[in-house]
Amino acid sequence: MSTTETKHCILEEIEKFRVDFPQVEIHSATKNFLTLIYQKSPHRRIKTTLTFPDGYPDQHALLVDIALEKGIAPGLRKKLIKELSAVALENQTEHDAGQIEPVASRLISFIDTNKFVPCWKELKQVFDKVQQSAQSPRGKGSTITINDTKGIIKLNLKDGKYYYACSICIDDAYPNTLDQQDWGNACKLIVNSTNFPPKIETLLTTQAKELVRRMQDGMQMEEAVRMSNPIKPPDDLFEMKKKAPKVRLSQQVLKNLHKDVETMAHVRDLRNIDAARNPNNAKLKANSARDRKEARREIGKITQNEIDKDNHDDEEERQWQMEEKARIEGYNFADYDGSNPLFIFSCCIPNGENSTITPRALSSV
Image (cartoon, rainbow, N blue to C red):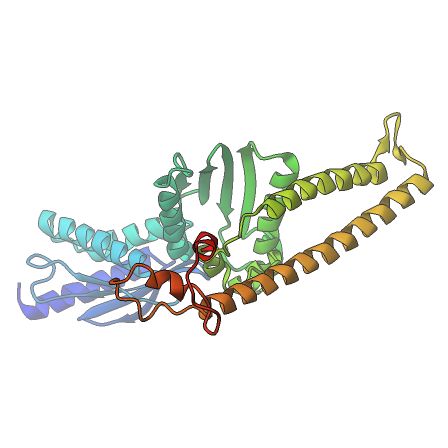
């Protein structure tokens, strides 16, 4: 086939495609390339360029390129180029009827039947996190399954003996919900089963739903996470865990621990007096207003006493550390070469004191 005939066949093929696929927007069309756009929703939109090499369609398959626009993840672009190129190659080897319609049909089918197009990168991140959790000893058994057509992600997350199974449903308009009929439906979280206590399950689920709602209102992800969990961990949290302070375990410390346990048990009993309900009528308190007031007052006194005692103990510990540091700095070990064993005992006596070694001095050392 001559070059002129080939170009004429390409233009005819493009014109036939324009008539058969009116839902596809043709951005530009020449005898050398065709750029088309197919959009299911504002965020399920892919722009594709088909280039016709010399020898098309009987000798060479057309070349496919996907525009890396906003919302198109690099992984999705690579996957589509590979699949569409394979479709073009299959039709090039079988017949010379053209490859535009088969390639476009595959692209349209992919966009129509895959709700994860606008969140491909997010989905990959979720896969990675679940797989990472499943490889850990505590998260062993965590799984994720997806349904492209329905836009459903099923998660079964495990941590030790606890599990949380839920479904995340993606709306057709994800992530944009400006239209009134789609408002609030961009991302739905449905709890399937869990063995968390009911209050903990409600806390976790409500926090996740509130996070989604804030992001639907236009809030950035980092800010939405911060607002849904207002208790900000300290910046040096992990450093604090690595460098945990060493506690000097003494008899006094053990006594204090025992006393703290007794105090906490007493405070618990006082709180029960204030919060207990009448077993016959849950709307009534079990104890009188006077008893409850006395219990609250006693809790306040105990709390203040414990704060004062902790401050006093911390000050004593700090003073002891300072004295110990000063005592160690007064010793001189630098000149000891190992030749005279008694020299080490003389070094243990602070500078300026009597350095005579006596049995009593040795026993004190």
